[in-house]
Image 1 (cartoon, rainbow, N blue to C red):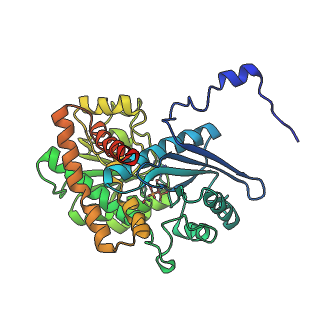
Image 2: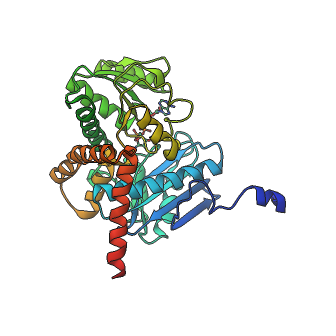
Image 3: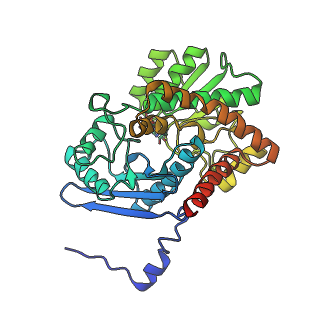
Length: 366
Ligand code: NAD
């Protein structure tokens, strides 16, 4: 066995864990390791003031463990604000599994991950995210009750992605109303980047509304399939420079960054991906200056969390749809607040979410 021991100099240069750029006063970060199944996971619990930290599990082939840590820190923080702005009594958490979901995910690994989730006694509740399916959550359910997004046949609310897509569609329509004066997307050019679980459902809503839909994905077979199914055009050129009205990021985060921001021609950004702004301090402001209306991701992609919250609270489909439709009104309010205060739209959303957390904290201390 070889043990790598870092020298004092190396330890110093690797920087403090609590000083990680993405560390934002997270309550707890749990590293899970199991040699037998090959499990390497990190669970990030950002904040539990409003309730247990709920957020999906992502499996991804990260280039490094630091990249995985950075992702889970950013994603779990995003969940705190997503639940807060949506009015749910949930905190923010997320988990990442390091590995290729297509080749390294096994039932044994998922069960072992479930045991780690269980060891947190409900402080963190998991669900599905990129690289996960409802069936994976069913396996986790075998060893812990602290999981949502399980199959309908097993008492769950089922796949959250169609609800997420519907919420994104509502947020997009609200942004169109604000920017173009009408929420009718008929004839509008919309580019959907990433046509996975959520992206496909969004394409369906857009096609039904008569939008001119363009699609981009790294999976050519998927592009062919979705293009045929919904008569969407495959976009092969640089996605960021596409001459469209609306850009809908539905793949991974951080696509609004130093390299892409100046190329954007779209008037609106509204999509499902989490953490679309690579650096929210910089890129939110730049979008505002460029007059590109950004519908904050954590606000409009909350349909999925509304769906899984129903599993915990026991409310029905009608209530899920009502809460998801409400994303339209919340988005309009946030866009107006941002304009009135002359601040980037995601700051307006963050301020309202933070206020709700602070108010609850005060109540709890009374
Ligand atoms: P998914 O894994 O089903 O789909 C992702 C798609 O993006 C895949 O088709 C993949 O090939 C494609 N992709 C990956 N990298 C790409 C790239 N560089 N360029 C173009 N395409 C690329 O995931 P999903 O469940 O549809 O989720 C999509 C996004 O929405 C994720 O960021 C996820 O965190 C977020 N989100 C999902 C939900 C949900 O309910 N599923 C809820 C909230 C947020």
